[in-house]
Image 1: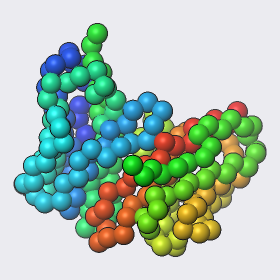
Image 2: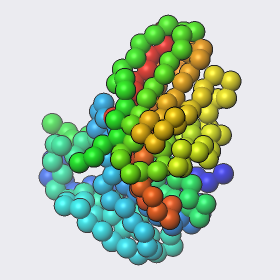
Image 3: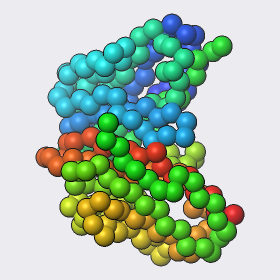
Amino acid sequence: GQQLNQSPQSMFIQEGEDVSMNCTSSSIFNTWLWYKQDPGEGPVLLIALYKAGELTSNGRLTAQFGITRKDSFLNISASIPSDVGIYFCAGRDSNYQLIWGAGTKLIIKP
Amino acid sequence: DARVTQTPRHKVTEMGQEVTMRCQPILGHNTVFWYRQTMMQGLELLAYFRNRAPLDDSGMPKDRFSAEMPDATLATLKIQPSEPRDSAVYFCASGPPGVGNQPQHFGDGTRLSIL
């Protein structure tokens, strides 16, 4: 079956640092979605990408749809305490199946 | 902002009991998804509906789980009989009509504990 590898699994960062995480797939996707989940809540959509090469920003967040259509990354610039949470990528294949990454847990060091 | 509404938010019950979880999708959305989230397995798709018709429930244990959409504003997920291994957070998500690339929007989940 299709696999989607999300890395890193977790990140410990200092407030103010930039953050980068990525997802890679064994197959081509038509859509990449990035979600954030806070404790006790459901995932919330951050950015949706629909074209290879597309680069989209949402405030301090920037995500790109890889040119090979098999990967995507999410960057967070100048992290702040409220950025903590779990970030999920999800890719949609040609059958419109949505495949989820295992998540990247972001922790800010005190 | 419109949100998917799930009830109850928390449920604790003894094994063997029937559990019913409810979801109100965002008005105008025609696709509904049920997910289960655990630490070990992450987000697992259990079932999804389009225009109230079940399209895929291959991720759902058929012997004890059932999912229905009695009308466009209500989706239900039932477990009967419940077992301790069913303990998890169950999320409902809905998506707008479109060519199939539309993102899903999640509710805040039902945290289920089976004793």
